[in-house]
Image 1: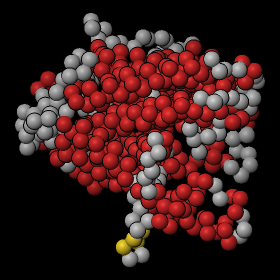
Image 2: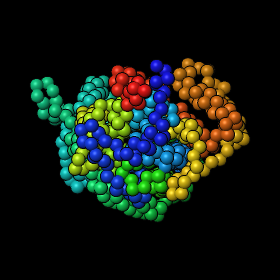
Image 3: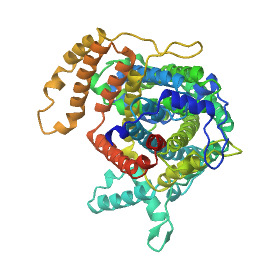
Image 4: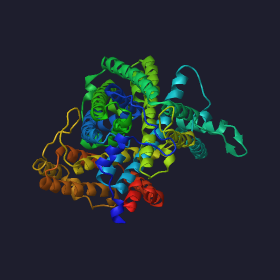
Length: 567
């Protein structure tokens, strides 16, 4: 049985499936439409990356790291760059919609492929729920700017309103009225003014539901329609972001950039989760491989171009933010709008609110596009029911998987607030990056072919040991304190990182591994160690749930498994 768990789907098998054309049981001969080129893929990458992060999480990261947060954006971009090159290598060899799931199937085997597929479903679902809720907030604020008001009970989730109501009652009873914030009052008002049926309050986030339904419909009706909508939204938000950068530089006070690292490098690294969340998305375009005209050439270019463009924009935005006001004032939910109000340009904040609405909608669009294609790939391999790989005869999209994705995102966004588990999106993405980088190390050597991307090979035999020694010197104190104190469990991920680094260094010396995937794997795993242990626990619980589903369904109906039994 252990051997069966790691049965692999060979590159030849995958490529033969692509050549012969995937078919589903009910609609044989229906295929995805090939309509994407480099420009479209680049814009899709920008659409996925430049979203809520640039309008919200950048504020908290700047507060912790000061102007030095630009270093974190560069380091994170380099980390993502290593991963992007590994994704590009896979995309050029395996032009299939499954992204990291399919890559893992070819290199690690079925069990790891299931784990990464299940991980990606969590990443996209939770990320989209969080983005839908953020879009609702930006949209409501946008309406408020024009004097249009929606009742609070139609713009908030049930549980947030209930908790706010309870909290206000407790603070009022204890005489702590000064601790009741405006946001708390607004949430409590939703509870107090909401109509009800019996004892049940009718409270729901209607804007979040509306945007999910609209985006799901757009993704359902075709890749060409999705492409046009994405391109339009990206051009609009990039124009606004560039305008904000140019205007903001006229109000920069260079003195605000000193000290550059007010809280040291550790302060900079506190923002790693938020900054990495701002980069999530460039990998999502790899799920569109079967809808690219030339995936082996265009997908790598699209991922790398979008990452470079987004990095430049992020660094410029961070410099503008920390230059316009002191970093100490940036611990706010809407830092871009805040700094322009602070310097007396309130009208610019309205323009920013428009861009925020468009930006978050485009992120939602790309993730809603990606998730059904993961379901579809897993279904083709028998790990999910056949309905998930059904292709619509008219629209040529994974119809059933798209509808299910809509429900999976819309229902929680309507009634719940998942802010406490959004770190799962970061840890899930990093885990996918780790496996993709590791998978490249396991790929068989391949001859370079004209018109196809190939990752540069740099021998790590001598470089890896030097970097390991430098790492030990830099992290010597954290390493010595690994098992001291009561919070050993919080440092356990770092212990795993040290073990992995040592093992990979030895492997690099013996097998002359390529440096880029080695650095990508280690840098992504290090970023995982910077996340809280609660995120690790939640992540492990999610994976355990996935393993239960695999052994009760996927293992039994695996296409590869049934082929092995027939042979």
